[in-house]
Structures are given as structure tokens and as C-alpha cells.
Length: 366
Image 1 (tube, rainbow, N blue to C red):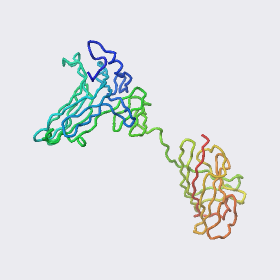
Image 2: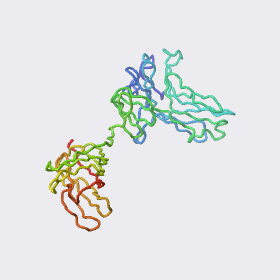
Image 3: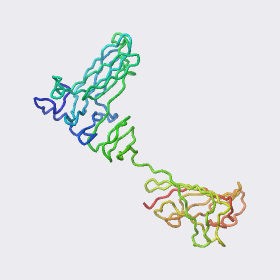
Image 4: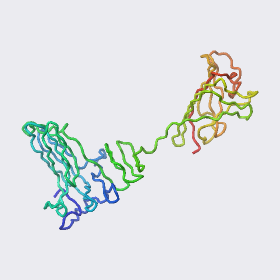
């Protein structure tokens, strides 16, 4: 017999049954129940689920189902039935209704006479015939069964009329199941997880069950606001933003930090009391740097006109803050008032409406 089921026959279980039936396929859905499904995998590694694949024979009403292993869960008291199909299984669908189309359902089904009084004790491949209708519906799966495929049978279909349109008439219903702790491969699945820390692969995206929802894993960082502390390297002539317009954002990926900032100085911005060219500006970093560097980024400084634009190099003089150093001349070729470290007088005397726009990337301390 090609289809085997473990712990089912009243006459005992063969050694072949025991070897072929996987008891490790136990993705829990409760404290005692297991997720019904097919064990994933293929010989080539190309497919999530290769077992129990239905392949139709062109021009006919018949197809073959490929070998595979599965679990079908019943009630708490009955437990889960492991199944193995070791040979290709032929299936044949009934001819179509003369007037209406229908949808059949191919399932793996467990018969257990001790519980269902069917007089049968076996696992079978079964076709649940749908009801012909102008708007056909998928039939309800029988108790203790695992849906594999929906098969659309148009009106008047038979081997003599070209058979089932296999390329368009199949809809997959197979679901996967894996061992406890395994990553469950799925394509479309709305089922909740069964324990915090459970993982699944949804079309290539790893997800983790939090206890209330599935979330992409690892958790992707998001951009955050940050307001830099504005000081000087001497501690004198300390400036303040006042009503300056600030838009400063950063994101941290592991130990990599990306930041950008836009500063437009306002009418109440203070550039410090009696500043000198030695009171270089210092802006705090959103996350401590691993070390000081000569450059982590660049900024454009503007004094309101197209010609008054100068580039500056950002360099962290400490692991907690960066300073700016003029790195170009003006587009007008007019000499700058001052060069070197940027401060209230360098590269020009700063005023309301002047701007600094910059970005940087650096290594975080942790």
C-alpha cells in the first residue's frame, strides 16, 4: 500500500511504517494539538512544498499525486495522524455537469473505525465532489482531512472534450508543518502563532510571533528625530538655536548610524556673546561614536545667496560630538572672511536666515 499512516492499524505497525512516518513534524497549535500540513522540502531545494503535488494529464480527467509526508490533526483525544505517500498516486475526477461547472476538492483523509464507525482504518487520497452551480463553491473538507488542491471542472468537461484545463483549473491548498522550533515556510497564511518566539518564512521574509502578532525579523530600525546640543569647543560664547528651524533625523542599523540635518537660523538665534574664531561650534551626535575620525560626512553652508555657499567637512572631535571645518571656497571666488573650524565668525559672520544642511555616516560605539 502506497499511503501509510502510523499508529492507526489495530493489527500493529510495520517497521516500514515506523521508519516512514515522521513524528518530529509537530508545529504546535495548542498545548496538545499539532498543525496539520505537509513536510516541506524537495530534492532540488527549489520548492517550499513538493510532496503531494497534483500534476494533471493533458486532455484527460486524471492526474498523479507525488510522494510526500504529512500530519493530519484530529481532536485532542484522538491526536495527530502522520501520513507518508511513497509512490505516485493516480486520481480521476468525474466528468463535468452538462449545465454548470463545479469545484472539486482533493484531500488526504483519515478513516479510523474506532472513532468514526466507518468500518475502515486507513489513510486515503479522496476527491470531494463539488455541487454544480452557476456560481460553484468549494466543498467543505471532511472531518480529519487535509485539503491539497481545488480542481475546477467546467460544464461538459470530459476526456472526449479536452479534459480538465489543468494549467488554469488548479488552486493549491497545501500548507506546511515543521518540527517544534523549525521555521515554517508559507506563502499566504493568516493563522496566529502558538508561542512567543515562533518563526515563519513568509515569501522570503522571516517573521517572529510576539505573542499577539507576526512581526518582521530582525526588527527593522526606523528613522528618529534628534535635536543636537549646540556648544563650542572652548565652552565660551555658547550659542543657542532660539527660533531656528531644525529638521534632524537619524537611523541606527547595528553599529552603523546614518544622520542628516537641516538648520535654518532664526531671528532669535544667538551666536554667542563676544565670540572669537577660536570658539568652534560643536554639535552632539545622536549616538556615541566608536572613535574620533577625520571625516564622517559633509555639509553645505549658505549665507542666503547662490554665491555664498561653502562646503564643510564633519569630523567628530570627541565620540559624542562633531565639528565643522570649511572644505571649499565660495562659488564667487571671493575670499572667505575666515577659514578653518566653523564658528560664529567663520566662514562669515552668521545671521538669521543662514543655513547648514548636512549628512553623515559613522560607526557607533555599541
